[in-house]
Length: 144
Length: 427
Image 1 (cartoon, chains in turn yellow, cyan):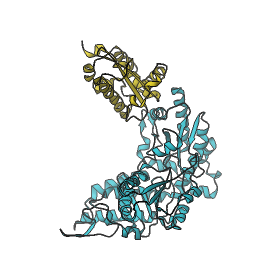
Image 2 (cartoon, chains in turn yellow, red):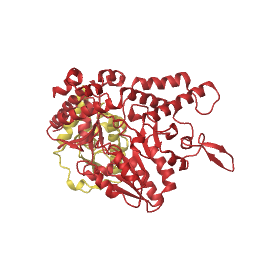
Image 3 (cartoon, rainbow over the protein chains, first blue to last red):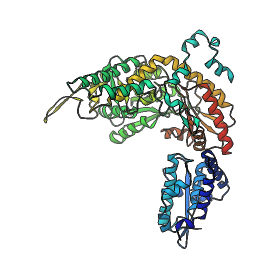
């Protein structure tokens, strides 16, 4: 099975973004995801320095729970737009193995913002992907 | 709200004679800056990131193009025609800058890459020769990293210490706190003329008087000072004054260190190479006199010529006029932005340059800046290379709108509208 078929949430996000043909509205869509994800439970104890991604302009926490070789990610940020981005990233790329995650590249990241973001933020998203791959390589960083 | 817009654009009769003499023809000024007609995401650019770097007028880009296209060559070397012309233009830029800051001689003007390089030069040359373990360098809580890290490096190398003058919660620099901090171990005051984050202006003349009364030299970081008001280094009586070209509507990659002659003459070279020597043999070297002693290698020739053009440009408009215009913008922005519910000014000292750092209650500064960006409004966000100041104020960062000579009152209204939009989208 191709990796694209293993990422239903990713496909939903891409489809939604492609349907919106205005960059401003795509930007607002990402903000909206950020606002909605505020309600998603990201445990306060996960907001530790250990789970903090370094080098980000705002705070980004990502945790990885590994089960039978599959990785489930959870993410949070103190800024809404970044929360929207990290939320799309962790939802899109959960349920894959470490090897499958390694196949993902910047093309997948680009599809998740479709020009609605500055280059700096695209670089930030790519850094999130690399961070997630790293967590998967070490077998996750939380027990659930 | 309409009154200031009206005065700025139409009703000059409402101005006093003095105000009139200082009024800047902003429409005309703006036409010198082609980039201001750019659209960003389909919206007209509103450039409020002048504190990071200012845009360049045609007079600067024309001077740069003319240099490259008609007389470019290396300087101080060739016997040929182009080399002579380039050398003349390069040295004329030095003289233009000397007159602009009223330095006694063009020998006091050293070209550097930027303020960071200028301060590093002083730290590495003057600092290594004249400072020793136990000596103190006095800075303030408002310094940019460029005026902190070079002294940290000397601390690690020589065992000097950094002493920090506190500021008040609203970002005010108090002379009595400063005077208290000047002690027997203080061997240098290294101080900003204007905070890049808070806009707070420091009364440099008094700072220098108090230091000189104790025989302590003063280095002024003028990066955010010289762009907003006239600077006269002899009147300030400072020992070093550093500024950068790209914030003063000139090219990037060129900065200036002014140094008092007796200090420069006593300082060893900072870097070695071509152009900074008198004689070289395999047995020894004699160094050139200042400023060339501190300009090793091929200098940023065209950048210096471009900076000369930028200085002529602002000088012709008049730094008094620019100052008056920016102060009017600041006053209007203070009133207009205060109307926004939840708007919090960071830094409210009475004497400020046209720099406004702020937060909006409940919103992350990065989110605010991102929404402003989508509306064509360019601001800076983050710690502004002033992490210790952020720690002092107990915040992680701010949004900063910094104004320049081409900004107008309409743009402040649009900033306010963009901020209302940010609140609407983000809450």
